[in-house]
Length: 546
Image (tube, rainbow, N blue to C red; front, side, top):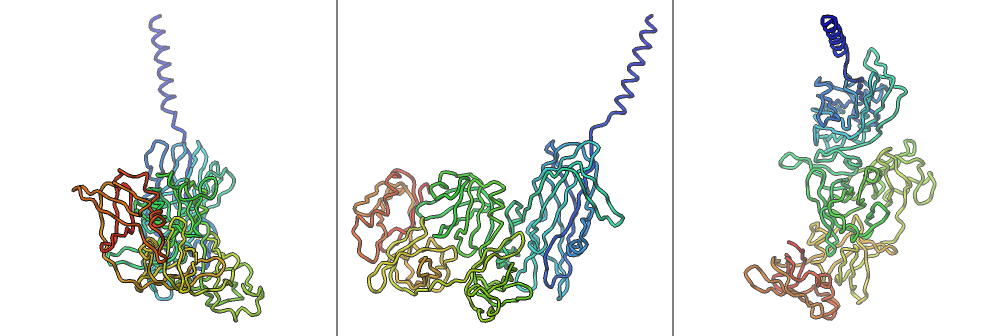
């Protein structure tokens, strides 16, 4: 009886062992493809991209290498071929992978002058998206490289490739790989559809890209820097200075960027348009911004930015400039922007922006126009002629309100003119470009400018001033006298430094001048850092907590 029991137990154990040997973890096939939906690349006949590896981020938190096989793809050939090409395929454990990474080691451009190695801001293209691998089924991920939005000139004969890519993934898909590695995908369920881009720091995010009006140069250290045009950035909000009208953000790559608000800057939050006070209450929140590379003036900024807000920020760029050429057959207009770049804009219906007809477009060369460029399609919206009259003016700056992007001058006849700072306003001091924050130091200075008659927006402010020596003091804010228009800072050594509020050309009373210090009354006892005119003691700027 014991022997029979033992035999039964052994048989059961044997069956269990066989069952365990036959059991396997759920897994499915993952297929990765690449395509190149690009518009006309002009003189570029070939754009070869070398990808060294493909990885996925697993539910376990670890990266899983799909392939380390180095492969080169010509994005021009992919565009002309039509079908996506096989990049990699592998069996993966079932689960939802939340990120896919490509390592791009090289980009080569061929144009009329020969072959060029393109600069890459970063090699790692990591995109957040769901690749849902199910047991005994196929999941797909296609990387659609938008070459015309990714490739940029540096000077006249060098190139930068900052990839703009659409990632689309599907689960439970039907996949057929042809003899030439062309891939057909049908059916299944779409799990991700997202477009991302890369900035000059090599960061990848929704809404990022290099603007088509960007002016790029190679620095003495070999870095690629942008000197003009629009900049698109995402990151976190560090602080807001209500007095100076500035917003400091930390870019996704870790760079601190100080931006300025103009009269036409668009600031938005999750519930619509907001102001600086709203932003001041949200340090650490995610932001997406578009701003002028030369001046740091904001065109548009989204606070509490989710993927939709980032996509909105990067979806369009306002283009202003002078018409250089029309091509009625091709339906394009060439506009020279303030940054000096030539933008060839595709328009849906080429009509003269002044008359509405095609017949006399040739007579409109030199016309100032503005339009909105759709970055996804490369198509410009309605061309709007600048018919607002330019008014020249000169006088002395009386007051500056950087938080509202406005200032006031007193002209030669003693009349006050309230003016607005635009996102493309340039401030020239002694022939050199100055920052918007420098406008406060010009209070009382004589300036010449031109502004729009109705909107009051200023194009360029020219000031010729004697450079005044500036000093800096740090310490405790001991006293704020709004009525007399001064404040006192006690240094760490115990010295009291008395500073005056900025004066103006109209001879305002001390109390009117001192009103500029009203916002500081609640900060007595706080640590401050102030910059002031060493000769007159007139304060130029102050920061709390410095």
